[in-house]
Image 1 (cartoon, rainbow, N blue to C red):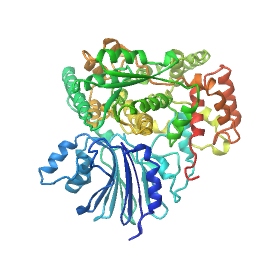
Image 2: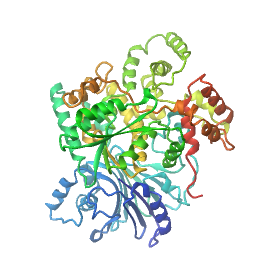
Image 3: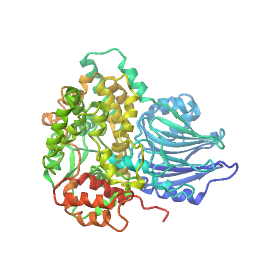
Length: 629
């Protein structure tokens, strides 16, 4: 992967600020440690930091197609680029490099932007300057795997970058906290939607491209409408289960094999769960050896190392285990330093360490990310189904059950039964969409109101609004698929993909996820619900695909997750840091000190478990040093 950035200036014959572009580019050096460069033309300056994977010797960027007046800075991998190259060569075009970067330039020159994007298979974010037409395109892949932020200046200029940190260097942009985004973070643990934590800076939505021309308003075009595609897939003729299974197996195999193209060492993550285990088994159908990596904890209820070792031994991989040790809070500080927005998914910690360990051996790793969103693998999908059975029960009865369960003592084991029951019953009286969102919330609307300073409170704030908006986009889908679509538009886009991108790019590691191939995603959208969730167990078609390739114990295993024991760490090795950061002189931005102190006291005395919330507050406080100071 790589880091990209740029400046577009509207004034005729005035070049963008070169030193500023250099600083923006350098701020992304961790994303591309192998090479870097900038190109400045009239109106536009493009910057690039390169992680060399394909076309290592000839893929320097920004790349120019001088005879066409085109310049490109690109982050990603185009998995079908050999096929596209052959198509272009059949039309008489010749290539100067062996990289997939040149495919984008030549493909745009031959087909135009819309047709080029229709043909691409991969993960990408890129900026392409068309000099003859005085037009800049910012493009993001269909699912939003690779990040792209942008902002407009008051004079009609445009700034963009792979990470927020580069844009925060721009003097023309205000470095003001987006309070609404902060409210969403505090309730969900991540920034949801297209807004960023900084006012005026947005993320380009997945499956879209932005067009900028001097003196004109920016225009955003959706080239991949997942809601429309998913709805259309529901109306296709239904096949028998064996036909779906055969097609699924073949497509997954293709998605894996295409992601093995690399000129640098390649391996895989192996958690011991179904998704990563099957990906590793599929890789070994194409090569005889595979290096795999897993991460565990000293707290036994959180560690998956025994399962990973079982699969590694069964498959015969060259396996590396590592332990996340947090006696010293340095890890927390390092991770927070690489997150240019607040982020409170506790699995960011082991993911960061996993990527660091893998990078010491290789440059590219395959992962099983996306399988749960694809095929209803989360506990919340089973909870949705149970909710459909009981939500019509008398409200007083559900309220009584909720009250009684909330009195049960908290357990600090990994997402135990009591925790799940409390979460479920606290949302059981809500409608299906709100209940689905509720089960992933850190704070209720009422609890947030108690925590936020009165002067900072956003009247009319609704934490479940993003879930409701996504749910409303697909009214014709069946209940399960509506919730899966909500997950794609919220949890996957703003949590899972952000986590993997930031943790991997902190170490210059490229992560490829076969389950996030848009062709596989579109295929699974059209599957009957019983091939995703059968009874209360998800990923039915994937379990069938794994038979004979993955140990039966792994196929039968329940979803475990990748959470960290932050409740233990907050009350243990991080105790002093928690007090220093959350109760220091400046306190936590926007929040009432007395309420924060109350949460800490309850947690340290073990009266209540506020570990995940206190972790979120820590990450909110540790984030945000202005890079210009």
